[in-house]
Structures are given as C-alpha cells and as structure tokens.
Image (cartoon, rainbow, N blue to C red; front, side, top):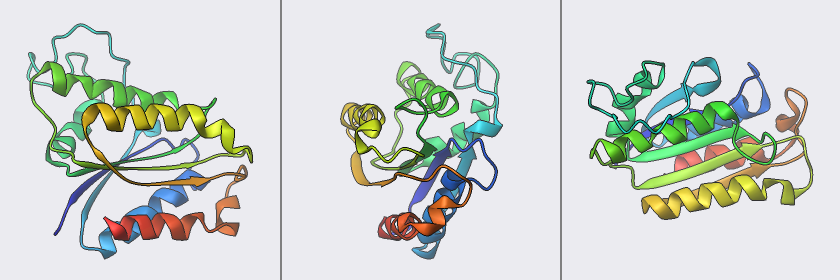
Length: 181
C-alpha cells in the first residue's frame, strides 16, 4: 500500500551525515513505492509556539506567519512522520523542535492528523549511546502521546565530520527502514 511520508530534517550542514541519512531513508521509501516529502527545517524560518491557542483561526495552522505553512498540507495528508536529525545537546535541534511544537496547532484547531506510524533517524559525533537518551525519551513520549506506531529507530554514533557516516552501516539501515514502511 502506497503511503504518504513526511520527513522532517534537522541537518544544518549541506551534505552532512544526517542529510546523507535522509537521502538513504527516502531512497528506500521511494523504492517501496511511497510518496515522500522532505522538509528541511534548518533551512526554514519557524517561530516557536507562543501558546496563543489561535491555531487555524486565521486560515493558517499557526497564527504566526512563517515557513511552517509550507509543510502543513503534507502533514495533513501524511500516513507516516519520520524525524531525521543530528543530535544537539542530547536532543533535537531547535529547528526540528519548532516543527514538533507547532504540531500542537492541529490539536488546538481540532484537525487531527492521520499519521499512524513514525520513525526516527539520528546521528552524532559522540560514541556514548547514553548521550542519545534525552532525544529517545522525547521521541518515545511523543509517539505514545500521539498513539502512533514506531516503525524503527536508526542511531548512528561516532560520525562528526562530513561523510563519516559512509564508513558505517547507518545508510544501509536507513534505506532498509525506508523500504520496510
């Protein structure tokens, strides 16, 4: 069955390790016949949620006009949400977190998302797997709260310099996860 997949990326570095991870994941998903939309949050301007609770009252998901508007149509039609990001200070980069926070607009606006599945792909320069605990806890709490089914997590430690990920099995695992959806 063809699925609509939205991938939110957090790669600030063009051609960096997490961008290569995204490319492998989307290649696998497209090979499986899925439609994939990639939203590069690090190249967008997205204001943080202010809790004004006026979501969708102005004709947009968020009353604050910013680049979140670009991803809203894809989110409304998505079956799967994948988060692909570098690890920043034991969690998501601010750009990815801003997108996650603005998902609140669908709740306030009483426009439930039809997302049922999710995936997480993350890489970092650290070799200490405990450094991923904060991001993993946040991700798992989001999945539980939303009632989504986690379809897989790909963690690639020890990749700091551009291209380091090519010396790991991370890209193949990401491609396999994309194909498995």
